[in-house]
Image (cartoon, rainbow, N blue to C red):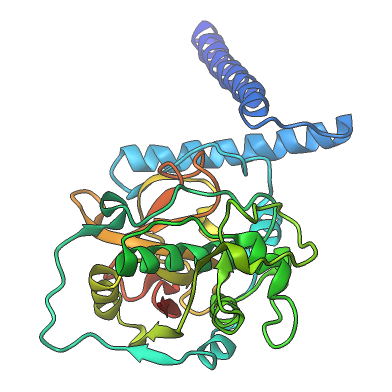
Length: 333
């Protein structure tokens, strides 16, 4: 009996040691893959503890995913050494829906007899630029603005031009637009700036720096213009599908708190908020997945190492889950 107890104890110790070795290997790989450097040994130890806690959470979630109890997979990415609160503070910022709705020129409602296609992916039609990376800056609002405008301009003109987020960061911070660079902003106010300004520069002429700098807008390098702003009416996913299918990519605001470790699959999170929105992204299509069900195809601005090469599929027809249609806006070009 004593030998059996000793054997079980040794097996348990070996398994614990094995997992510890795996964490050590994953931690070392993480630092190399994401070029992580920490100023002090204490900071390194703290980040390692956070990484290990997050990795355990990811592994536990993925065991449920493998058992068919979750619709999406989690994975290690550039945010795995951050506490959830740090991630939220760094990458997310509160979006005032009521204030934003007051800046809309038109409201879109799909015709009663409209029949949207079962699926659409504007990437396959050439309407979507490459996945960009906002870096350690809360400038998602600028990337969502350029994303929808790039797509809408393509639909109208057949030309895909990458537009300048830095132009919006540097030049739409004054009254009446009052965007705040890395501290947050509004897609509707950014579109209003482009409309009043007579255009936005191309990305190649005004590249992204990730910090708010002096405005350097140059009329010689206009990449797109805006005539007005339209919002999807009634928080209706049917209306959002129709806009996406027949007009092009749409900027939306969502609750992104649970997206830190998303890797792939259909992100179905019934715990996220429909009203406390904090992240702006771009719907570029929609479809159906056998395992995860109906989804929105969404372009993010956290680089290609996050999610499905920079994209996330979010649950569709789930009663406005995560607020994806609480404030959906697109430009009139």
